[in-house]
Amino acid sequence: MATGTEPSPPAGNGTGVHDASRAAIGPRHLRTDRWWLAPAVTAAGLLAFVVYSTWRAFANADYYHAPYVSPFYSPCLADNCATMRHGPNADVFGSWWGLSPALLILVFPLGFRLTCYYYRKAYYRGFWASPPACAVAEPHRKYSGETRFPLILQNVHRYFFYFAVVVAGILTYDTALSFRDEHYRWGHMGLGSLLFLINIALIWTYTLSCHSCRHIIGGRLRHFSKHPVRYRLWGWVGKLNERHMLLAWASLISVALADFYVYLLSTGTFDDPRFF
Image 1 (cartoon, rainbow, N blue to C red):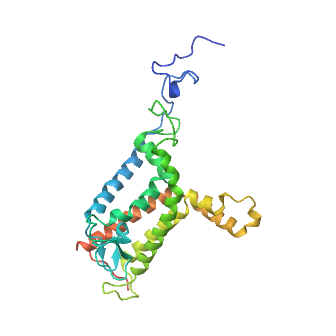
Image 2: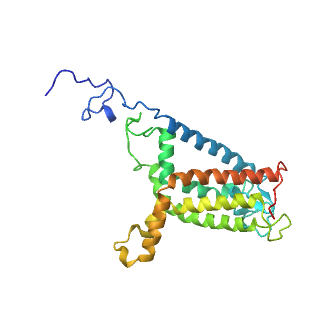
Image 3: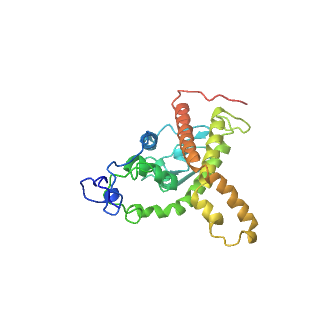
């Protein structure tokens, strides 16, 4: 029953939250908290990593200090790579490749993170305001989700997961090599070794907490009782998946710190403390 007190719909194109089929509420949202803070901090954090990683990827220098190799440059697949004894080097790309070798490998972990379910939410809200926050209308007139180019390419996330597992395996090898001294003698541990251990642990937990990993392990099982091992693994991955956002940020920070630590050593700014 009309009372004559209903607010009139705001003037506009009549789309989105102002569509004729929606309730005629004047304000774009009714939230009174600082809802904009979370997407703003997210955007700032992601932008800082993009700027830093871009600088380091194109630097083509200061990425190896025996026995540490930056995770941005491993495996090194170009002829112009620094000589890394027993490192994951392979001259797949010959002398014709003159750019930074990091550009050959970063596409895989970058593609994995760009298509990650959590990171999609993070940069959709932080950079595109789609939507900026829960219960806050987005400013766009149309919404097609991930059904059109280029966002339909987000469906390749599962395939990037396979590459991410390979890269994590190589970084595990790098971590093992970090238990040497500058003369490549085994049985030594420095501060860099500890940082590499923390980094690879976070990278593995982030990778295994991926939604695609969880689905691959047990998402299509019809009878868990017939697959007790996969069911147990599915449960463990599910526990990690609950902390996927935390692991995404922690691993992003740790991989940048590991690279920066190698940079400091390579430029002579800092000497690697040895525990034994």
